[in-house]
Amino acid sequence: MSVIVTGASGHLGRLVAEDLLERAPHSDLVLVTRHPEALRDLANRGATVRYGDFDEPDSLSTAFAGGERMLLISTLAVGRRSAQHRAAIEAASAAGIRHVVYTSFPNPGPDHPVGPVATEHGDTEKILRESGLDWTVLRNATYAELQVIPGALAVAGGKLYTNAGDGLLVPVSRHDCAAAAASVLTTDGHEGLIHDITGEEALSQTQLADLLSEVSGRQVKLIPVGDRVLGWGLTRSGAPKPVARAIVAFGRAIREGYYDVVDPAVSRLTGRAPRTLRDVLIANRGELLAAV
Image 1 (cartoon, rainbow, N blue to C red):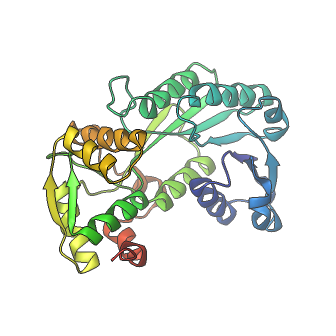
Image 2 (spheres, rainbow, N blue to C red):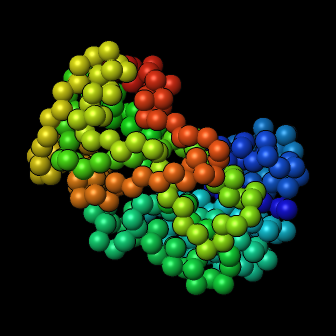
Image 3 (cartoon, rainbow, N blue to C red):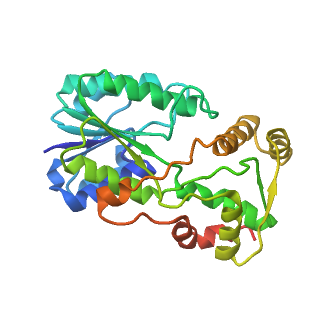
């Protein structure tokens, strides 16, 4: 069975590809990317690497040829993703792919505070449901690895500024997202299902500050602030306004419960418990302490 992975040179795509190389015949794996040279090592291990660009729909017919199942990894082009994903889904259908697995986002509804970052995922889920293809949606929670850089800033300054209030966040490691995706791609019975891919531990901002203190060995104090104060502080510290707005929106979404989703899907799909945020921070302790 030929399995296609799009965005295969990205962080998640490469992890999925490496997992699939352990699970399936190497000749069955097709890796699609705008940067084939970045996957030369995986090509040397037997995977097929093809050029494909969602902004160049004509490139996708060749890229997807012969595939049976495909992992559609959401792109990073916020504002253009719905069109890009539609092009990929239509090309998959035309190429004869039967089943598309899509990496989505928690609670991707139209009222989500992070705006197009979430709503484009909702748009894509709808396109996929209406495509006539078999489909599976993997709603990946916030990547635990993305907590390392803001965590390092908090450790360096000894303060964690947040507008998240009493909201809860359930980080999940990219490695566990990759393992869950590889499982869905290589096993049956996932058609028409939405899997919430999360960690097993919902954390408050107080718990996050305590965890940063524990792992770093330096005291991190929680400083609750409002949306406007956080935005002002970020821009005053040099953050571009769009970045500051995105961070404020993320905190608001946590505060309003959009990320408070805990599901045992990772254990169910992979047969092992997901990594905790503590595991990820410990694995990246050097980066966590780099600015100290």
